Image 1 (cartoon, rainbow, N blue to C red):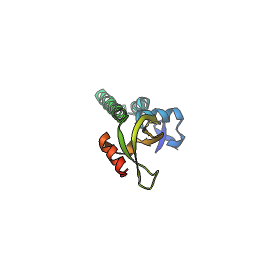
Image 2: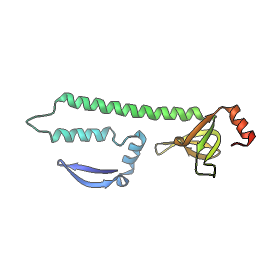
Image 3: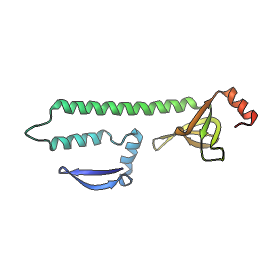
Image 4: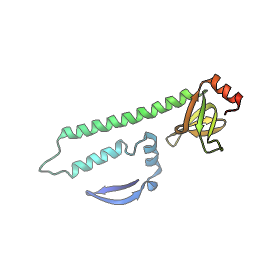
Length: 153
């Protein structure tokens, strides 16, 4: 992603996201969004500074923009909390995960714990971490034990 600072209504200091400071990068990673409230307020102030004085923007448009941003932010946070709740509910359950760790392309085991690292959720299975996005199947314990005893997994 490429971003640029706005100075006097002009783009300057174009940089890639790899040059973003770690605190800004961590904040955007934690929220799961590219813009946070501070970025939105900077954009809003810049928009107000460079509006046409003969046709100023209506205040209701600013309120609508803020409401929309707040709604998107709340939805993003709710999605993150839902993912965390799902990860928590998987602790103690038998799962099959897609992986490149072996020739089969999958691993199976019980989820021991979950962990959030750099905004990503990982499941701890047999002392290794696997991305929650790689979850393939959640198994009933008796079915899992039957598959394990038969040698299918």
